[in-house]
Image (spheres, helix red, strand yellow):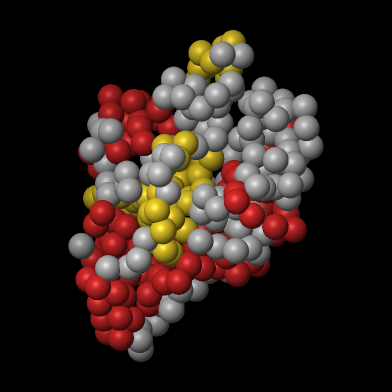
Length: 305
């Protein structure tokens, strides 16, 4: 799945960032903050990964798509289906876009991918964290947006297909769904309406440690840090700097403000990533709660800009 640069630096928080955290936490201490149900998100994750390995073209992939379609059946769901040329041949893929309308003109995109690694298709790999946890996050976030018109911008949930490489991660063999949708939205004008794009990836890790992705948009990362500080959860975020190629990249290249919220340190020396050890017992409702809280508060902060 995603690519990270070979240079990974342990980042000390700068004085300015520390002041930002402290001032934000102090100023907002008495404010009522949104709260996310990480336990429900973990249950969604478990139900979703029960489909089994879901590499593109597999029976599990079809079951995962059917599961998503059932969950969003009563919402404004758009299925973006296309055929991609891959090293394994032509592959039919579907992005799921779930739209929750707001009172302001503009869109905040919350995204994940839902497929699993194709080269691991002959193993028991189920991607509980990698693709599963962020899908569970979006499924529960939908509960916060249903049944009422949002006060700020519209929120669109996007579940990308084909994030994983079919052979080896390269610019041409990766992120098929996000590249397709970014090009489509640029052509039809949707991209101009996107105010911010928040990507969640591998955020269910019991030992949550979200990287500060150096490719992401600085002001949006700063809002995420501010949101985390309001909950006293800043220790879970940005203790190290990474450079990640992921589903946000195609949108960044087209000028969209993006943040990749990713924990790329999964298990000792990242040893659970892309192995059959990526299972439900490695995840935690607490980690999903922390991430969900920060997503909800970041949305509120974007609406205040």
